Image (tube, rainbow over all chains, first blue to last red; front, side, top):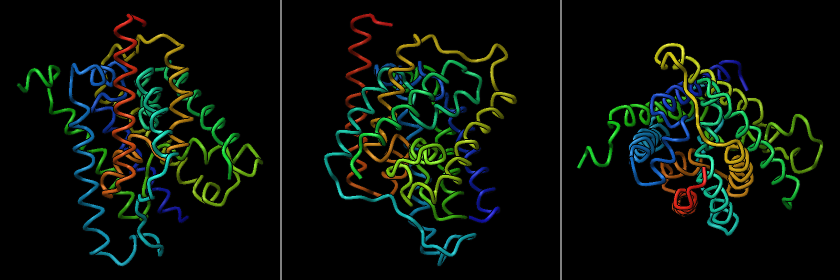
Length: 137
Length: 156
């Protein structure tokens, strides 16, 4: 991976984290207020992000032969549905409903000084390790 | 109606979402990568564990840039905190066992599912992927049930 690409990953990640903080989704209480049907802001965050990304995913591969900095093809997020996807999502949701933190906001919340989210970050790393230990390759 | 759905205002939610989409788009235009936020929790283990699972090529070959994205997310929120954050700082009142226990389930679940709110939610829905739609509806449903059960029993 070229240094220029890594730089764009850093900038893109920073935009992502800045946006998460602006949306206040880094605060577990804000996520939980959506899950408890008290404030539907999360739908605006998700909708806004999906809209911009959908336009990009549709338009850019038609305008460019390959990514600006790499000779590889544009990726897509697509996989056939299987039980792992659904069961994993169900487990993730139970955890999300407990702590109000998902992977992106875990990094952003710590960056914004909500220090006890370090517990959640450690938990996610541990959970991912447990998954790797028990998964069949 | 608007006030009922968004008692704390709506503009910051929409602006935040558009910024998140801009970040994902920027990385896609320059590198062609789909940038969900959950894979880094597996790929980073490939630095520390020699187990065959973590040493798979798909993890080792993407571990560096995925870690850079995660550091970026951390730094972007830190910039927000420095420029726009409340002077008293932010905090969460959730008890430690909800933060830690929830994190464990989140980590296991997202890796089993192959995506999270950003991987399935943003990138998957933007790719019009049916499996991601199923994942999103599933984790929204179980999260709502869990949060409401704990609220109903008054467990904090």
